[in-house]
Image (tube, rainbow, N blue to C red; front, side):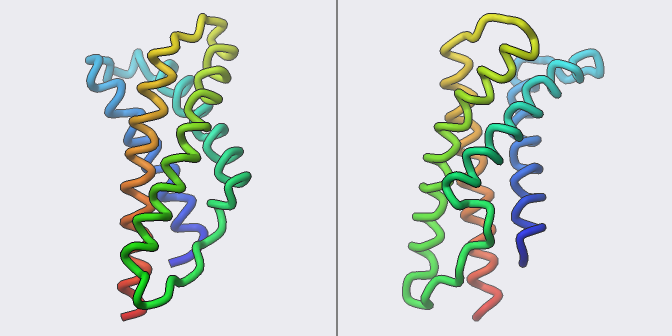
Length: 134
């Protein structure tokens, strides 16, 4: 697996989180597409800015065999922490794009759900990468 898979997976994970968020509010029609993009695009921008700062856009190094699974979990935690910074930034960007107030609860929910989605994706990625070596 390489950096392209990692980045495409990040995009897909954030897209799925965005879809789930809109689905929980019953907003899945095409008429909601502009608002979905107004959430998804700032989320991508914020994630890639923060993730690069955290060094998360490079393909993780191969963990030593004895630490493989625990390394994957710890890397997932690092990703979750990065998303807790990226989420509020995304909400601010979204608020500027839509020229709307920024509800703090939305920042919290977007940050936590995105962190969970990214932690799941990145942990799966590292576990699959570790299994490739075996």
